[in-house]
Amino acid sequence: MKPIDSKKEIRKVDQGVLRSIPGVDECLQALFSLPDLENVPIVVVKNCVRDILAEMRERVLGGEEIPPDSLQVSSLQPIICERIHKEQQPKFRRVINCTGVIIHTNLGRSILPKSAMDKLYEAGSRYSNLEFDLETGKRGSRYSHVEKLLCQLTGAEAALVVNNNAAAVLIVLETLAKNREVIVSRGQLVEIGGSFRIPDVMSRSGATLVEVGATNRTHPGDYENAMTEDTALLLKVHCSNFRIIGFTHEVDLPSLVEIGRLKGIPVMEDLGSGCFVDLSQFGLEKEPTVQEVVVSGVDVVTFSGDKLLGGPQAGIILGKKVIIDRIKKNPVNRAMRIDKFTLSGLESILRLYLDEKTALQQIPTLEMIATPFEVVKRRARRLAKRVRKELSALCRISTCETVSRVGGGAMPEQNLPSMAVVLEPVGMTVNHLEQTLRQLELPVIGRVEEDRLLLDMRTVADDEVILVAGCLIQALTGSTG
Ligand SMILES: *Cc1c(COP(=O)(O)O)cnc(C)c1O
Image (cartoon, rainbow, N blue to C red; front, side, top):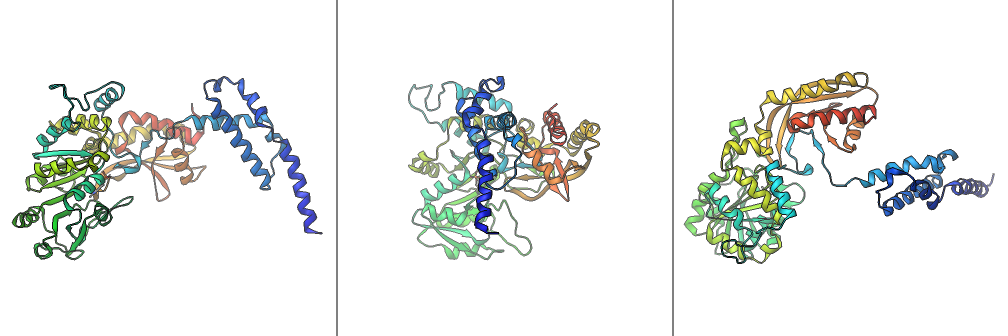
């Protein structure tokens, strides 16, 4: 009758069940004899035991009815072991990209070829001439290892590499335009994923943004009229992740360079993705290559190392020697400098570009773009065939044509024809299958479309097909066979 009494009742029951939860020491005692845990640091075991016991206590206190049997040490043991196993796995690890997005920022953008990784391994595990000039025996510059290559490949006078393209844009603006004005077309004030917005980067650099033109149209006169004594730079931003269509006009780079030259004001292009190879040969829309941008006479151009270039994360700055020299001397440069791993990976990738055919074959990002539809189709069929029999009762498995994306904010509207393995599970929802695959030890990341799970095979390497097959069997049958 009285609510206060019934509350006491519940509390009494709780206490009984709570008391039956074993103690940490009791659990540890039982776990010590397990050979599986022999090499697991004791602190990991202890923390997992504590966490599991605390969770049990929470559940009891939360009013959940837990059978006393499942609170015994023997019942808790497998749960604790599973948790320990999970904790032992590195948090940062490999996944299989079945999204069809080639430059997927969340999945690590570009991957490097084995030849580059071998060099990287050496750079990490041995001493190197990172900043040591082997000719003179004196201190050298870490940038010298890639500067000449970059100039050779692009025709630029000078080059510098920093941590990423965001840093590249920031340091160029800070060096050339701090406390002065930078003119940008209104249609190019873009946001590139995360938090990189041109107006914000501009204000951080200490430069003042002067917007010209209308969202859809900017003309040479707009730039000319906006130039003052305070103008330090004309900036063009490559609109890599969106497109304004319809009644539009942009001032092209050669015209912008001409406007700048007449007034003696430098011109910069933030190219974003920056590619050395004309990808229109693979059915993609023509985008200016880095070489073409350099030829236009631009004073400075920046782009990412891990987008279409297919290298490690880096921001590459190319341009006129007088300008690059000023940027090199900026103390901020030290705070943005690349490490030996980046340097090693970048040099390996750049060397591959000395022969375009080699670059297309060996740089994974380019190779995935260049892979013919027929090859992707065969890969999809191979995977479907591998698992169809074993999973026939659990999942409908077929293949379908789909489209891959280049990604990385590059070529947003452009599709590459591709082939996907289509999964329609019987005993579970498609979202549950997606989640299970994503949470495997080797996660498989696909995409759900119209209540089906699609595994786009353009971004899956040939030697990963067998791994994906194993993952599918594991996710659908629960066996690791
Ligand atoms: C991607 C991109 C950036 C940022 O490059 P990060 O290497 O990711 O720092 C800047 N500008 C443009 C136009 C981009 O496409």
